[in-house]
Amino acid sequence: MSFTIPENFVVQFANNFRTLYQQKQARFRPWCQIESGITGQSKSVERMGKAEAYDITSSHADTKFVEVPHSRRWIDLQDKGWAELIDKLDKVRLLADPTNGYAALANAALNRQIDDIILTAARGNARTNAGLAALPSTQKIAVGGSNLTLAKLLTTKEILDTNEVDDDASMAMDGQSSSEASARVIAVNAKMLTNLYGTTELKSVDYNTVKALAQGQIDTFLGFKFVRSERVQKDATATTGYAVAWSRSCIGLGIGQDINTSVDRRPDKNNAWQVFADMSVGAARLEDEGVVEIACA
Figure 1 (cartoon, rainbow, N blue to C red):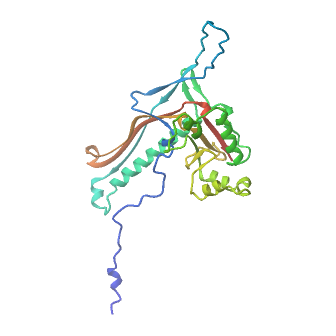
Figure 2 (figure 1 turned 180 degrees about the vertical axis):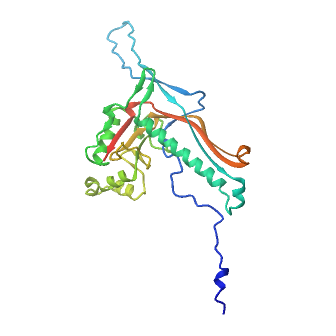
């Protein structure tokens, strides 16, 4: 009987890497008007406003000319990058090669940046020919000491409806209905959703749609596609978060260069391998009337 056999016990190490939980996709990209192939630092979006018709009250009357309001918004590109080195000699000492994992991490990081750029554009200043345009106060719902509630959602819908902002019904009437995505989207975080599910109005009424929403069976309510993101912005004290609702045509996402990933040898770093990714993208709020900021405690 040997009492020293534990001296020969072995430890098995994994030959691959596990990527820890994180947001990997750009969740709001499908809910933007894509402006691709941008050359230069910026791209303009030309706008025409509403002009009402006039009455013709007699035969052979003089023609009256309407005044069509013209304006412009700008999409400014932002350059983003990600890089990591893998020393050539370090790879000799590793069972698992991290190269592919690093490339996936780079892609995920830049996708999160796309969402940040979109959310900032939705709530922030939009560049015009005359300067910067802030989101009007009429497009903002005050915190009111509460998180996301049914009342705030109904108010959001009312604001967009009053502004004649595209929804699924209006797009269908115009022959533009799409089965791929709803016209309206709302960006929320997990805390906002939890509060919404727990509100008295929703718990006290047998809302089959709300029950299905809470159970994850559907993700649409009151005509809004709910997209959860923990990158929803907060104030400086982190006591107020901002859900944002918009119509897909009201946020423009400009692409100068989409995400590009490369793996190259770096002679200046002792032939280490470099995993590098970059992109050039930007976003802008194209119409103020199609965006609503919802402050949530």
